[in-house]
Length: 461
Ligand code: URA
Image 1 (cartoon, rainbow, N blue to C red):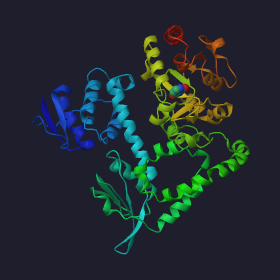
Image 2: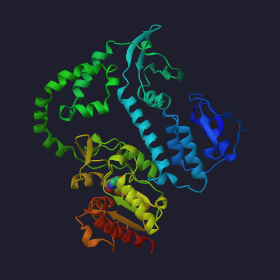
Image 3: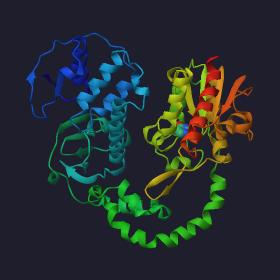
Image 4: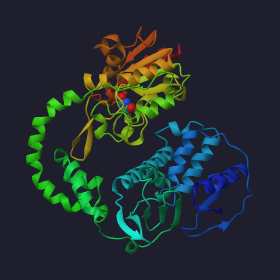
């Protein structure tokens, strides 16, 4: 085995990987060394190579985040996945049950979560430097995310001069240039200032007593961040007042909710799918966006002949931001494969684009969307279907059937036969794949799965 030395940046990894691919070096033949791990093997020099490999865009997006993961194994894993994609397994990233794909998505998820945490928990402190106001924050990321996250802070705090310090790397913004310097020790960050009082007041006003779950709070806001959060000092008092405030909120909430639920406003016509997706990312038409991590929009090619509509994203979809990538997605993938339907050529979406859930213990339990949720979200589904004009439209389960037909539509009575809907002359209703997971026993499950595959076979006849 030989050692490949490279700078631990995405650009450098990509160039080295390209050279390794063109030298036909298999993943087993090399060990990636970014200088941090022990250097066991003999180094090997590779000639730089400009060969372009046709790799799915999704891989590059995921890889750019995964290089930020702190695990040493990320370089080997990335190359292994890249090797497989370029050696006959182009759709590897859609095989969610594959060990390498799953490991890659796990790292991706951890990095994204860390990015999210940094956005939520960075608190600037006011200092005066050479008679200029400067805002400085200390942050302890789990992964190497300072660089990929810095543009977010530039956008958000463009009018401030600021530095975000960490032990890995520091980012600085002087209202014009974003620069990076080496990491520093915690003592370099200022501790306390007058901006803190402002933060505490702000936090007290946005603090929602009805959502106080101490364990969930700790999971979301690990103690390691507390010492950097001025508002942490306000928490005990706020917790004490919480029950009374909840009571008042419940009284006020019902009427307010009614008034609040609107309908998604889809931007003017002629948008493409990508612009629709961007617009939907900011949708606040109903309250579901508040508890969801992100809008999960549909995905797949505009030319797709077959469109699948599900209910709403589940827990994993909510975190990853893509439809049908959790357990129900695995059933759907398997069934599609068995029926001869290629997922990469289909468009997959949901009737409701935000995850609706309630907390039970430590789990976020799925809640079925109601008619108002479906109604509020319908403009997005309609806009997708108008653009896609599917030859075949498949409703997975009753929420999808209700959304597509615009009225209560029974699944078991109508499954497995072609029907006409507003969006496609050939609309098919079948069960939702998660109903197969809920079957009472293995026999029932096998039967339900077989029936589901048979329904999907109608798409390839
Ligand atoms: N169930 C759905 O209906 N959609 C998803 O994306 C995941 C689970």
